[in-house]
Image (tube, rainbow, N blue to C red; front, side):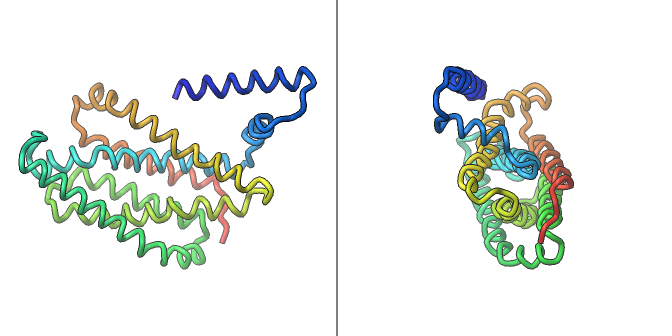
Length: 233
């Protein structure tokens, strides 16, 4: 993360030197210019995207230790119970993916009724409540219920931000800005991979259960951030 920021700063310095020396605008100049001039609606959506994907990466990394410990009663990674728990997480993830595939057909109707930003907010709130419920559920079968809400949120995250974004970007910059928008998927991944482990050890004595609380909170923040996004149909 720090290396990326350093490279970005060096690129800006290099660009200023080249332009200041009378050089012609290069591809680097155009890219940096596009970043600096991102449309306001894209900036607002980037915040939504950032917090949404934080929650998703937390789930993908930490659901297994949570389920194996609290639903299957083990932290021994070599035990049969742990393997059974890890396999059950695979079932849970297949459920939310299946729900997302079905929800994709219902989202256009929801958008037509509520507007894209409101529909996205509703789906993210359902996702946040679903993450929060993982703090309480201990029965492995009941753990499938939150996956329904997470599947709805997943379907929305994969589609609605791009629907909103496509209507706000200049056509000639659509490809560039869609690529830039994906930065806000990569950055959350780097943050979760590098910081969440230390956060758990420092604040929660190594208990991964509380990562689900963090996921619920950041998904809730993503939902709140949609309040600043224009509601289109």
